[in-house]
Image (tube, rainbow, N blue to C red; front, side):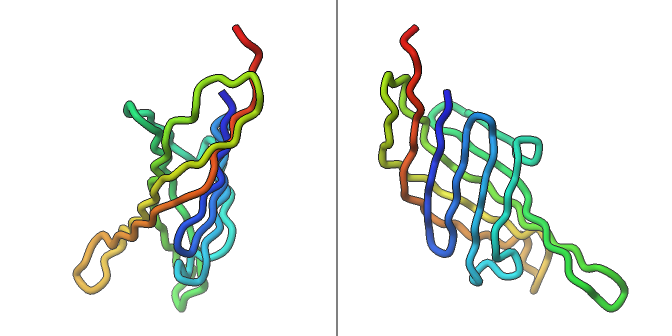
Amino acid sequence: MTATYALTGAGLALTYAAGPVSLTLTLDATHNPFDGEHRLEGHQLTVHSPGAGTQVSGTLRYESVGRGGPIERERTFTLYLPDAPGTHTDPAELSATGAVVFADPESRADVTPEYRADSLTGTVSVAAQAPV
């Protein structure tokens, strides 16, 4: 089934396509230095369907110039989405909610890892499919 989620939260907007799998994640300055647009394809994402809903995990990477060479930072995330509605003979766009949790695995001030969670609201669009 082809489903596309368009969701927003505090300081972020995302579009997740379930088939083929892709994610566009736009973060504002509150996510510095990871602010900006990130495009991740299926091979960069891990998708789990533990029962009710879907979990999508990935890693954002940031590189800056440092005195001894490049400084690389990572932030992992897990996106929690509801199941897409069943087969429709007409295209459908329905309300959807979800959540995203960011984790910063690098130690700072003896706190590791550092988490940030945001709730998401928006829509899920399902393409029409021919009856079986």
